[in-house]
Length: 134
Image 1 (cartoon, rainbow, N blue to C red):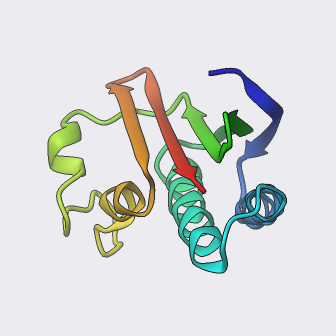
Image 2 (image 1 turned 135 degrees about the vertical axis):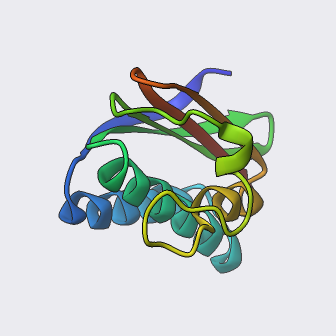
């Protein structure tokens, strides 16, 4: 589905994570999302952006505004060239962490979105795509 609007941003530092949150909020508001839906996509974006910095060594996010008839959405695609994820199923399990976190980032982001896709290969990085529909 073609995007109505698209923007790519760096995700390399904690300041970038804040900028991603702000950009996602602006797109969600412009798309007419309710406060609850805004909060869900912003929270998911924050979790994956933080993972991109902490575990992926930094990368980018593409923010797209979608329209499918009357339906509007926001799609986020985070890409890094980090070490990748050896076992995606394990990484998606609540409570699993390869660092010092709570182990809810990936699985929590999946629950907050209508569509979620993760692709990763050890040594080649990770791509996570999240979509929230109004």
